[in-house]
Length: 74
Image 1 (cartoon, rainbow, N blue to C red):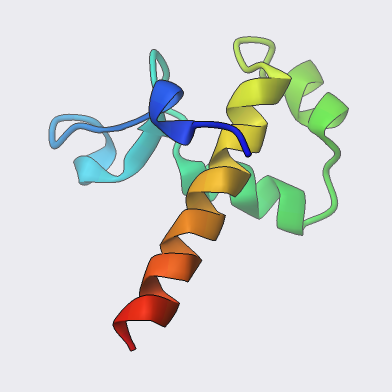
Image 2 (cartoon, rainbow, N blue to C red; image 1 turned 135 degrees about the horizontal axis):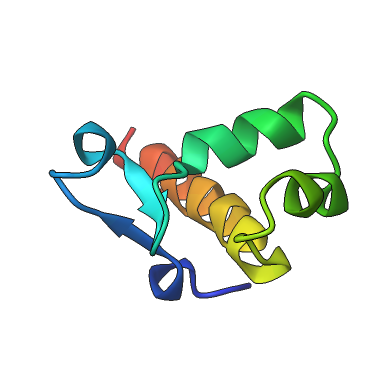
């Protein structure tokens, strides 16, 4: 699993404190939404060349980790 902490940050001054890809204003939610709507990793990179495959996979890793933490807490 990719270490998403290398790629994702939460900064209260960017996008209202939502998790974003470091060095961009693109949120994890944006990336997950694109994937959920059928975009491939390559299509996302074509539309947003500032993103890398690892950054996109880090968003998936972040979401999996959050889901895991939610399950543990309940």
